[in-house]
Image (cartoon, rainbow, N blue to C red):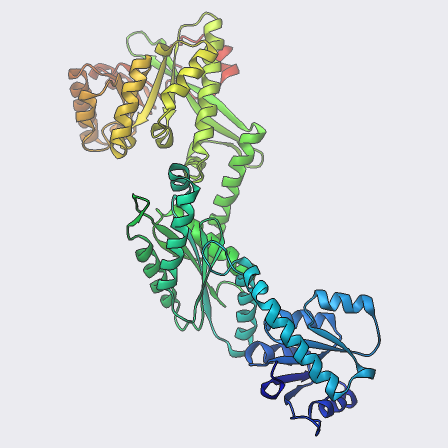
Length: 556
C-alpha cells in the first residue's frame, strides 16, 4: 500500500486518544498521511459508504467493525485496542479486521508498517475474495456480491436519498430445455444469456446470477421508475432473440419482477422478496413480460403462493379427495357413468373445488402428479363398484399437461392392468380449447387412446371455432355441452339445438352438463341429448356415499 497516496478516516470519540493517533499520522519523520477525523460511529459509516477512503482506523469495537465491513469492504480496517485480548482479536479478524494494533505499543512507524502489510495481504488475497463473489459459470457476481452491493446502496441512499431498482429475472421454461438437451447445453445457454444481459445494462448497473436460471439486476441512480420498466423491456426483447447452440435452434423468453427503493422496501431481504413476488405475478400473467411490485396486490399474490405451497403439502399429506357426479341416460334415467371430480380438503379453508387451485397447479407443474393421483384413485373406485357387481362407466378430465405427455397412453394402460379395469369402461374428457391449442399432440393422443379402447369426449364443446373438423376426423365418441345459459338466452338455446343435430349427423353422442332444473332436462332430452349431468341430476359425492346407494340411479 502506498501510504503517501492514502486517504485515511480516523474514528475516535475520546479527544486525548484522537490527538495521539493524529500525531502518529502526521509524524515529521515521514510524509504525513491524508487524514479525515470522525467522532461519531454512525457518521463514520455514512462517510465510508460514500467516500473514497483507502483505510480507516477505528476503536476495537466489533459492532462498529461489522458495520464498516458491510458498507466499505474494500477499505483497509485497522483496530486500535487498549489491552491484549487474544480471543477478542480473533473474533475481530474473523469479522474482517485487517490488523489489531495495541495502543500502548503504537508508534508512527508501526502504524505505517501495519497499513503497508495490510495492503499487501489484501492484494494477495484479493483474487480469492473476488472469486468468492463471482459465479464461475457466467463470470457475473453471485448472491454474496448482490447482498454486499445492496447493503452499500441502502446505506448510501440514507445519506443522499438516491433511488434504485432491483430486477428479478427468470428464464421461462429453462428446465424443459435442460431436460430435453442436457445440462451441458443448458450451461452454454446460461453463458450466452449472461452476455446478453451485460449488453442490456448500463455501465453503472450490476447484473448477478443468484442460482439456476435466476438473475438479479441492480439499477443505480434511478430518477424515474419508468426507467426500470424500459430496461426490463430491453432485457425481455434482447433475451427473446433466437439462439443457436450445437446445431439446436432455441427460442428463449424471460419474466421480470421489479421492486424500487424506497417505495418497495427498506432492507435487502424485503426488496428481494418483493421483486420475487412481482416476478411471480409476471409469470402468472402469461410470462415473457414484467411486473412491478404492487402492495395492493401483495395479499392475493401471497395467497396464491400459500395455496401453491399448500398443494405440495396436500399431495404428500393425503388431503385430496375424489367426488363422483352421475351422468344419466335420457332414455331410461339410469346412471350411464360417474365423473370423477377432484376436491381438496384444505386444513383451514375447508373443501375446495378445482376453481380455487387448478390454475396454480398448472402454473407450478403439480398438475401432472395430481392428475396421476386422480386417475389411480378413480380406477380403484371403478374396481370397487365392479367387484360389487355394478356395470357403470367412469369419466375423467384430462389436463393440458397430461395431453402433452408422450407416454400418457402407456401409463394409463399400466394403471388399467394394475387395477384390473377394462379400457372400454373409461371415458376421458378433453377440453375443446386444449384440443385446438395443442392439435398435433391431441391428435396423436386420441388415436393412441382409441387403440387402447378408451373413449374420448370433448368437454365445453361449441365455445371455440374450428373444432368441428377435428370432431369429424378424430376417434371422438361424443361431446359435452354447457347448458347454463340456455335458460335465459333463446339464441344460445337454438345454438345448442343445432350443435346437437350437427353432432348426431357425425354419429357422435351428446352429454348436456350443468342441468339445473326439470325444464332444461326435458328440453335437451327432446332435442336428442343422450345424457344429462348437473345438480338437478345429482350432486358430486364421496365414494362411500355412492357405494351406499344403487349405482344405477334415476334422476335425483
